[in-house]
Image (cartoon, rainbow over all chains, first blue to last red; front, side, top):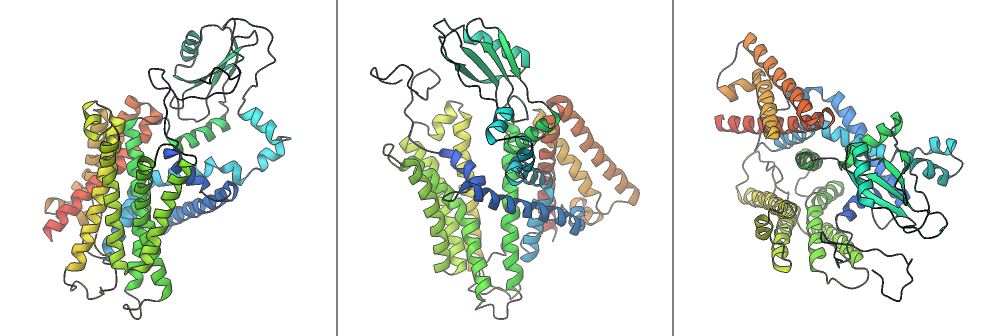
Length: 428
Length: 92
């Protein structure tokens, strides 16, 4: 893919489409940004970021386990959801989302910690390996090409992939060829990420001239398999469409758990305020941070998607500008929440998030040839379900916003505790 | 289709478990069940959930099957909860 003037062995990389043609994609981190962000954070050193994330995850695990012991009663009553009853409803929603989805929430918290276990507890590795390189060589072998020894034709690769798949009984995911066209050529075939629950791939190495198998790598010791399977459970790369949908819905339930818990904290304390018209600074701070964290974060997600589609395709640092758009949008919701009365800010940020999510499929339809209708007509469910999810999320956020508007318009007679200045978050 | 059938089973299973709780019986069926009927309902709920687990493991493999069973159990329970919440607001 290099120009004719480039040396033959210059490193190249290219994205090809299904027909083998080169594709010019806009420079973006795409969803990978969210993936990295969830354990490396951003704008700070990844080493300390992982410690921050680990401390938060451990706190969550402790909270879940101690919560199960303390609140045994709610497990028996987990079908209860009383709507339209203020604080009770928030408590019920909090209980339901956490108890009904407990298997998922426990699993994802625990396996998340396991994924970064060697970051938090590196001593086992330190005690057994002389250097970092030795550890990586043993755990993730990545053979380097040998000295060239003279030309020899490369054996056909496709039959070797077929042979590897026959031996494993699962699909191959990647092929690596060392010194192609040389007598020292080697072909390394590795299993696909969705070929099993463990994230540790198996590989077979073939001689690149004769096609004879040379060696097999199969990290299937008990400890490696356990670790690989736990990380696999966390990442879900093995999962089918149905299972992925269940992961997604369970994750949403986890968000409901966190969001309802945060709101419950303020709803509970508002009733006890000495002067509810002028809450003290700590209360106001939590209230405003809640707006940014619960309504602002989805808004920032939508802005990231919009930036991905609307920023011009060329130019250096494009992916950084997309990420900047995400953080600027998120930060702006905190500023907005601080500047506006809480009740108004809830409605406004939720509405802005709803509109932004609804805009994503519209922009897709206007700016690309992948409109929702075209995707549905082509039976392209990857694109269609993305657009549909955007619309669903927009509908959900819009529903929440309109519920709050109706709440604050309704006469405040329910329990006499609601005040004009307070957000009507008792709406369930 | 196996996925929908499993979701159906877990919803029925949790529905029966919910029905076996005395405080929910009036909301769900408008009357109280006897003690022995309650027991019977409860154990049929557990049996249906167990059957769903066996079916999931048999059809989808035990690794993926048990995961999917857990996920669909959560969905079945939340559907049951939604039904109960709907019926009890209508009654009150």
